[in-house]
Length: 149
Image 1 (cartoon, rainbow, N blue to C red):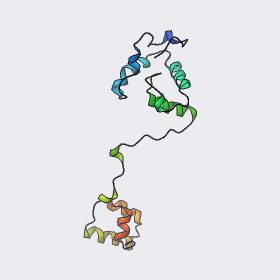
Image 2 (cartoon, rainbow, N blue to C red):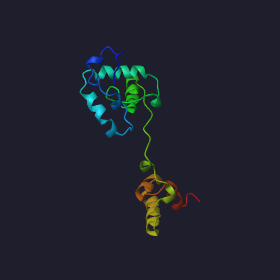
Image 3 (tube, rainbow, N blue to C red):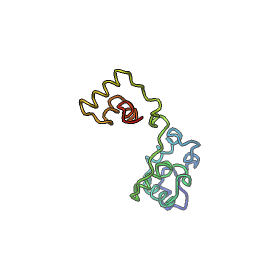
Image 4 (cartoon, rainbow, N blue to C red):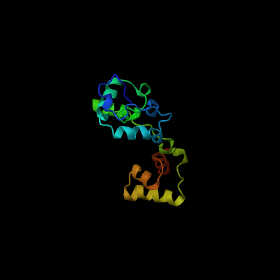
């Protein structure tokens, strides 16, 4: 959204639009869609984005608000970092992508244990290769091979 302070505001697609459109209650893509669609067709979107990034320079995510230049506050943080050549912090991983706890790894059957020992001694498999092949933690491989108590 633009104000009278910006010399280019008269050409903006959002000129005269309700400011609430650019400050949705949620950060969900659906809540931001209307504002982003309006910005996508705006002839001064890049100028608006440039000004938003200049005003917000050095500010963190919590100091940025609403849709500006067709981008959400999170997108502007990433764009600002990209323009400055800084690698932004990685996105947080959702609980579903966390590595599984090795405590609940599958147990090996006696046949699998024997096969693992054979591959170790006769075929020269490494501990990591055995770990991947049987889907167990490296510690389980070491214990099965008698390398660790």
